[in-house]
Length: 287
Image (cartoon, rainbow, N blue to C red; front, side, top):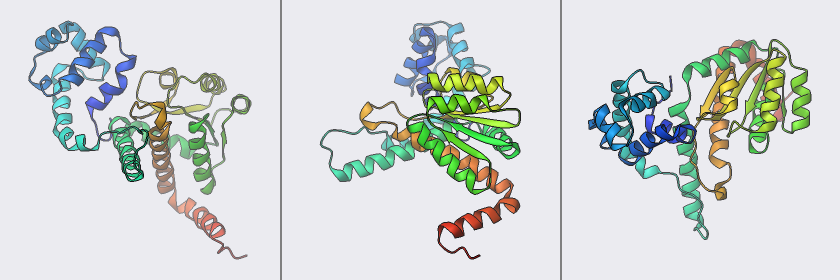
């Protein structure tokens, strides 16, 4: 169950991986959201140029047992939409005034976190925290901007004395995955979920018995399908001018959730490590 469910965000993110017929339904809903709660399944099928069965399959693809529960979710999402429209994602424009850039980047990052809260599964977060607590070793895998997220995760979990390491290039990732075993956690960070190096490493890690966790965008992908635990993020599809800003912020937020979850659950054990690392880093350590 998502922490703050918003079906319109899920439709937006899932659309690219849908069948051509499902895309027809998705496009109609996203372009006519105000009308949809008042439509019967037959009317929606006719207006989206599909069939009753296609609309029902569309609802089931999004995790609903039937059309009625789907419409209830659409209505709930519309209830908060008007307020949210003031805070739409804004891409970087050539020649923007610096004050505009400061405002837009801040708003985009906030929206990435809010949209991620709409798609991330609370039960999967709980499973991930449990697995991380019980692990012998945690190994983080990611390339590019995702690799930076892995390095942040390594820094955080090292502070509470968890045996962990981040690998951010393909050769070291394959080597590390080869040495994993039962009781270890292989943690994959990839926005697309289709990065070849990551998928090769995933296959090796699973073959060696490691439990796999993935942070990736809310969409169908090989990484999402094959990982034992899936933590979905949602970010806007903007141009290359924005780089990986939104996805990086969303991923870092999920890492923070997991770190806080583990540290809170084991607080009596980890507080001494947090105190020691805080003191040494702030120059207050005494022998």
